Length: 183
Ligand code: 5GP
Ligand code: MG
Ligand code: MG
Image 1 (tube, helix red, strand yellow):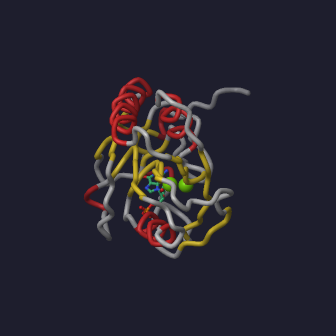
Image 2 (tube, helix red, strand yellow; image 1 turned 90 degrees about the horizontal axis):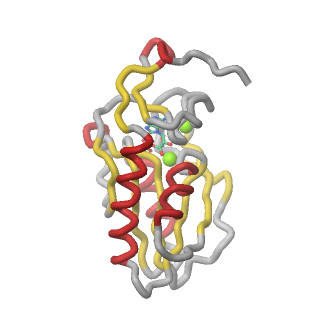
């Protein structure tokens, strides 16, 4: 595979891989303390959360089960519509479990607020959220997020699992996508 030159596609780097991994260690220490002795299960939201889940779960000091959900928020482009459809449901029963949803990014908050509503009917002992990134200025609904990695400006970002049209997910850093790429 020939590496494409994508330097023109990106503007500011908001978090380097090194900064992300350091943050995941910090959050993992907090989660390990908060959930000690509890039946914790991590639920990742595909596909954006794959990298966060991989690195965050391995930063935890104990074994932890992981499950995945795929949802699609209708609408192409760079904005979420809030109309959510389940593409792949969980494989496990959440009843009695302490669920930590692992998310790549909270933008409008619409997807997550829908997910939290959906999870509330599954009998979990608790449901909390860890989002690696959050855009406070983009919030359309308030979502309680117990653990946040980085608050970032209201720009469209890619890398570390985050895509634009399925590209850029395997970039190691997270950077702002230059508007000329999508406008
Ligand atoms: P929300 O419903 O909070 O607006 O965002 C839902 C999903 O849209 C996020 O979980 C993420 O997968 C995607 N998304 C939101 N903001 C961004 C962004 O800046 N970059 C990328 N690549 N995806 C985003
Ligand atoms: Mg996501
Ligand atoms: Mg996407």
